[in-house]
Image: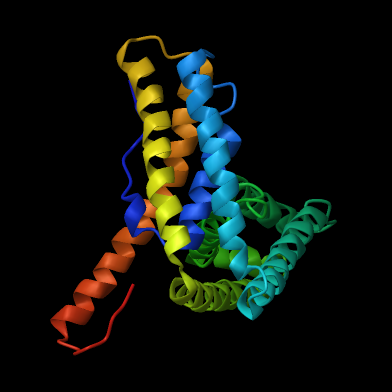
Length: 250
């Protein structure tokens, strides 16, 4: 039976790390059977999360953070505009437009409405959606329902958002204080303790449907970050191959 996958927590940027532990905090309640040890671990995790949240607020006043919110809203609005256009053409009096709308609706439904997911998850699903829409057959259907001009706009918004997010993360990395690092070390232990408890229940053959669902959903989130780390490692490897001196990359 599937268990929670591994992830190198220490390699995550502060913003990525905070999103991941926030996901765990949101998803874990009610998953593990309640007992004294589990309750104490979850309580300690909550205490440490609040400490991490406090020290991370140094970034709240960042200009980059405010711009990120604006850019996220813009890309979300473009996604919604395309979604509404698809819906409108499902009721078109032109049969060809209805057929194209049905085809593109199926593409959108693969990913669902991902605007409320984390920044990284939304970016990942958005890129995959664009790649699907750019396929020749789908591109023709997009033109039929008049969203072909919006797809490249949405793609550019995703790219601009990612570039701004990288700038924000670099800024935050420079701000990273000893307090953040120290709390992350303590949080790492509690994160792994919770995950080990989940995996232990699976190993004992006592996994409930709630645990199985948690593992499935949380592994999806972990995959996003593992893919990000792998891509980042690939870029760093490429930099080393080019022998660029004295340039430190994430």
